[in-house]
Length: 251
View 1 (cartoon, rainbow, N blue to C red):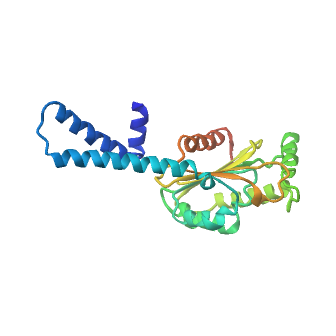
View 2: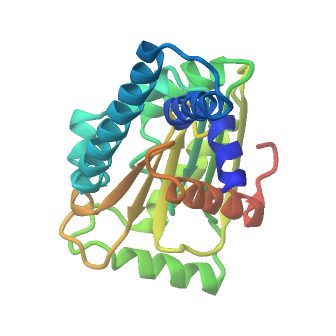
View 3: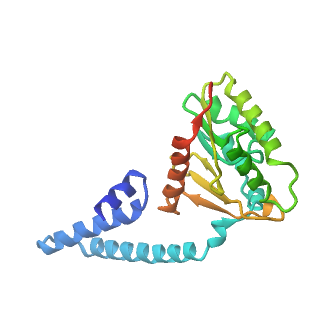
């Protein structure tokens, strides 16, 4: 419990609860040792703690009943567009088999003028490798089965993505850019924007099998401070993928 308290304080979580609890304990301790505290101070602390408790209970009920804020499909991007967040982002993490839908021309330009335009900005991308080995070919064939009516073959998408990433690696920008390749697909994609910031979020998309369209895929939108510890879990999944992936030369 003490470790969780320290973690919350370090990440600026639940500070209102800890502040009121501390004040309440101090007042209780002073009362026990016979301190002569005014009645209005005692009542203020009592009603303040009670009010916060009721508000927190109501907030927990709202969160518990709002799975529609976490479990979404791609239509949610129309009301909460990622592009707006990329403009002011400092750090962006992406893992996807081909990343063709995320790394379109508009978003690549937003990455260049957003996080990569900052000296403390960084963008890291992991996609599948472009090798012609039998293992990778089997993975590519498997990914082609994910959609009932694919618009483009995975091999063609990968070729375009690698060309785009190679071009991005040659950009002369203040921020840090890197991309790596993974030899297999774990069945999900991850996009994290400012994951260490107070308003950071992580989107985890599950690929499914024989989906009608890409837009029908379900994804989780996890917000820092609201969806812990799963937020930390999926963020660590990206870091594990990054550590296991093969660095690309010049990236």
